[in-house]
Image (cartoon, one colour):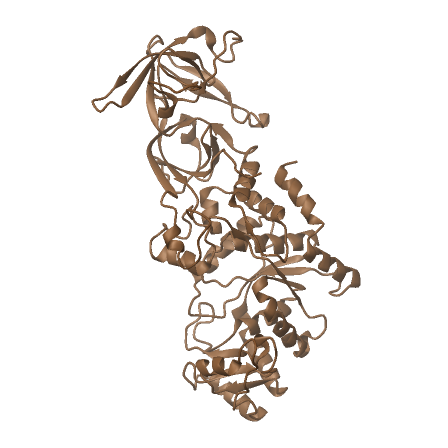
Length: 558
């Protein structure tokens, strides 16, 4: 069992949300049903914080033989777009591959929401207000002072019904009137001080077109959406905790939902070190060209993590391992990287790639000879089999694997030293060639034909083993090395652009990879020996291979 899986098993018993569900199941509160949902607004791409919510809601439904809905909270036509809808659906399907696709839109409930607003007016629990947005804020009061009632609060039910219908029919301009719930302007919870539940907005909607010119506010729409769909446990992040009293008030005052209303439960958001997570700030980075789009592998969006090479299993395991709590905290991003390494260690084929090549010529090796060396695809997973790697007189090694004047304890190539070429022979450095600028361009070696790996050789020992690729057979590749988005952890949202890591993307153009890579497909993952885990990027084509580094081999997670 992996360390990540072990952590998640240990945390499972302390999941306070599951405890609430267990109590409801024992009491039969919802007729032994469990139904959860993930309710994004389609105004941007999902990030890894949303992934935690998706994995939590989907995981709870799956564990309790329940149902999981994807529902778009599309109540603000000024910010929403079908392209975001499509990206979110793709992300949820990727994270939840066994999900029985259930996709809903808040906008499909606009007619019912209007009817419920009329019900509140008829119960004298809602009124049409003529105060401006600024005046409503002024009347609201503060955390220490109660608010003031609107002068329009005591309009008759008949007048409110007439005005609300005129609002729906488009007879008023934006901002001229709103519909507010009538609760308590002296409530210690500001969210209960007659909150606005409908506003006038003459804007075309991505789903309903121009049918509506009034739109429900999120706090009004969300509980109704949950209740219509039969959601049993509405799991939200902590910023909605102060909104729960209105959530409960609304459902308790609508006849259709008084019996066993949906239960809202809050949990702590996910924050990662060295990572900007705020959607509006990510949007700023995209629109102002700090990154190459929403799926730039430096971004924390689900689309970016997928393109970078993260696996859905790794993200799910990570979310399980960090657990669920009420306490807000920041998780070390090294833990997420550890989850990826943990998942790929048995899945990714090992291969040799030289990222900063220098030519090595074996002067006593026959010029026209080619040998094929058998090597394991994954020594930790023998079921992945072996492959044959071509070897010849001229190969490429890493530039850092040769030094003219080495320091102490340098066990790689230098004049007079002998090393092992992985799965091939021992070679001894005899000479090297420099260009006019003093840069080493070639290393000349001799080999010992008796030292071929796998031939039963058990003679002398060497301390250094180098990876290599055949100069005659290798494929050229571009390799993109990605690092953390933020330079350090000490930043806030006002100065985050100043803290962007200038080395978050390094592009290497002249890399050399094994020829077998040519037969692989976009999206396949590999471990480049000594370098890390990599994925073939979507920018690749038949004549140009592009790899993204997923994570390095070295882990700082403990």
